[in-house]
Image (cartoon, rainbow, N blue to C red; front, side):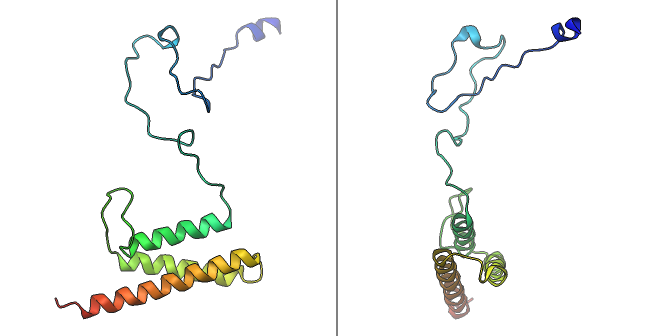
Length: 135
């Protein structure tokens, strides 16, 4: 058994830990690895919010607002109006509201009711505006 243990391998963690923004010295960089493009900002630079029911609802709200053309698309930076996707997200929130009824805290229920009401109103208002615009 002693021989089997000697044939193992070593794992070295080369990830940057929070608070450790400096790159490793060149002596620790593998040969042939030249300068790399900066990595995309990750959780170390911009911590993500705690995932709970409220952040989930806010995420769906943000998605619907993007599809309604009220917030810019994070990928393109442009306002893009897609009423079908907005309606689908609002309908999804409606299903969640129905299925979670009686199981939420008063704060979660208030947030949910307000988000769903506001999205439905904005969807109807934008629908009226697009019907009134001459083509």
